[in-house]
Image (tube, rainbow, N blue to C red):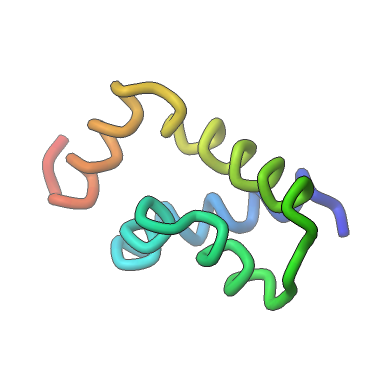
Amino acid sequence: MDIKEKIEEIAGKLQGDKNLMSKFQADPVKTIEGLLGVDLPDETIQKVVAGIKAKLGLDSAGGILGAIGGILGKK
């Protein structure tokens, strides 16, 4: 599995689906494992989650607020 490719793919899915983004924010590990269809080792899944959060700008408070605004339809 190409982790970088999966991060890109999942980030795109999350950006296009408000409900999925909400699930990711509530439980990122479970959401990612569900999207991948596999149960990955904790170390691997944490890297994927961190990569997706960085890609979506969710690592900082501004990124989280922006994501919440996007979910609520506000910019």
